[in-house]
Image (cartoon, rainbow, N blue to C red):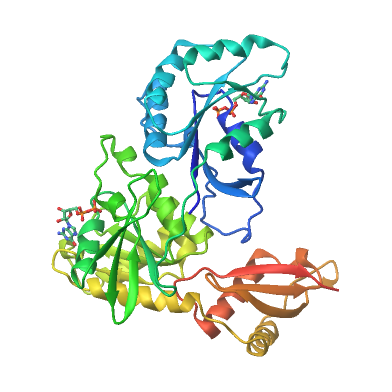
Length: 435
Ligand code: GDP
Ligand code: GDP
């Protein structure tokens, strides 16, 4: 579990510049995945060997009619709800503004650590940033995010106040499930059915500043953990519907999970927010099951399921591998089939393929469709090996990585799926040059 550090502040103070400065450009492991909106707002970073997740709350979506200060207030609310440490960025060039006081006042009331970064300070001899002491948030730290000046000092302060989050101690083969989806799609109803099956152990995660509560249940001798059921049940005090759906909390649950249950509403369909979270799960290498709930409300003919399937495949183009269940948490129809699918994709995520079988499969694949060539040079896949599980990762040693275009990579992925399954799991293909 990594602590969350949220960056808040007015527009244009340099939040995203700071965010990018700290996180750097992330080198994607799976390049060119179509349909995945790379989420630049949440990124893992580390400093002095300490890992954390950094959030640029400036990138959260707001209602268009919100004026600026209301947007900042909402950012601050999200940060107060979800983050362990808050970094307030102000603009040292613009100087102290009335809005800064409004934000500072809200932050002064929290028990969470707040760090005040005065950005755009390029002249450290200039004591002008001292005026920000007036905000009553302790010592202001002058930085220049653009030029990278003093950002190390800021990071020192950030990791110093960061809480140490403990590891959980569930059974080693427990399946951790993150249940995600918009409000009212039926997440809690479904989880209650899971939990109602057997004795439920609710475990507080000690030492957290949040009220994250996991629920544990047994089924067929296996332990399952539903991550952060408190987050599922909690109806946020923020009334704005885009805000009520706490994206940050969901992403945190996804990070800790083995399997993501993406719950969709059969009537309402797929939303951008759903795609965003599913895209995050995909990039994080999580196994995923799509659940179309409230199936009882759909008027059905013989073709309805197919139509829904097609629609979902279109909306989640990057999730062709995810199995889908059509459920009703109201009538319990197929709800327990969801757990069978969870078992199935969890098993697939830990599957290992022997090197010889893998290489035989690749030899057959390259025989059926020869690799591409460019300027007289042909791609050769020399050798492959499975480098890991959860998700399945393969290293392909090739003569010339540049020649391995997206479409051929996709072809290889499909061949691996045909041969070995890996249903419900993204496959990571890493490419290395070998002469
Ligand atoms: P955000 O809206 O808070 O995310 O702000 P941005 O990161 O988009 O930055 C707003 C503007 O301030 C951009 O034009 C940046 O180039 C500029 N800026 C950001 N950091 C610095 C800095 O340290 N010094 C100076 N002089 N300009 C900066
Ligand atoms: P959550 O916000 O995603 O946790 O959703 P809830 O579990 O609180 O459900 C929201 C509402 O939808 C409640 O009134 C549920 O009774 C109802 N609901 C949940 N699942 C179904 C379903 O499969 N069919 C129907 N008709 N209603 C459902």
